[in-house]
Length: 353
Image 1 (tube, rainbow, N blue to C red):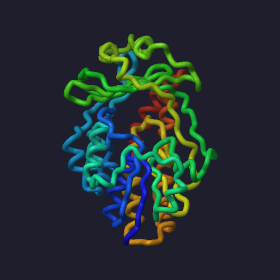
Image 2 (cartoon, rainbow, N blue to C red):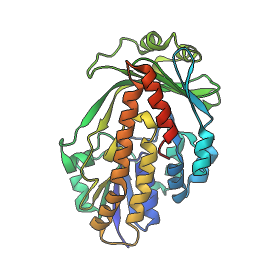
Image 3 (cartoon, rainbow, N blue to C red):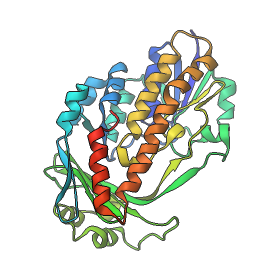
């Protein structure tokens, strides 16, 4: 076809889009601002729909090989009593595929390995996406929650929204037997075993926007969660200062379209959502495969992008709304018995797969 695409952002969605577009006959360049792919990072749950997307890209088996099947877990109270069990076997029976856990660096390495080296241009930031529209037949904004491509389309008309939560996350050199979450009053703590003596962890607390950061994150985490059930205190004792990331949680005001002319948005650039359903990377993968499918065997790029928008905007915005609702539920400060009942009903209905 001789069609050329620029993908802005070399994260999960951008690399997946590049693989899919190349398979659809496009010449692709990925522009990534970082100088190298990350060597450390937290774990991702790859749900069945996202694993099907990876299969469509030809890398599903490698991700399965380098990841691990998610074991059963539970959502607990701070004293260790159980609110609800997370039945991963039921999910596998329903969808024919378990949830696989893989670290972000491993997933990015697998995706990058499926591309010829010249495709991915590291240390190449994009400051004005409008220049790319003149040079390429397609511009894909896969550049995350602070997308410059989205800004070129919409300016500040659809801003980020503070979700009412401050989050900490990291990886600790400690092994725990099972994962899951613990929900307290206005705060929660999650654990995801990585294997080989390492555990991904995250914590979230309901706080007003602009709340001043603590003088020491480890001290603050011990104050908030140090009297919760084991192994949370043991993990907190294993933290090092350089292994803790802290940030306010935001999502994106819903966009009226993910496309304009020959420009398309995907992943967090299109529908940044709170992390409460673990669907951010998964939906980016599904976006990428859908986008490539719509652009196969066509030279009418605007029409193909409109088809992509019809396929992906409403489903992803529904999931983003559900994630925001789940975040509010987990941060409830009052009526905790009612919260627990709502959680059980939501899990019985089944998460997006």
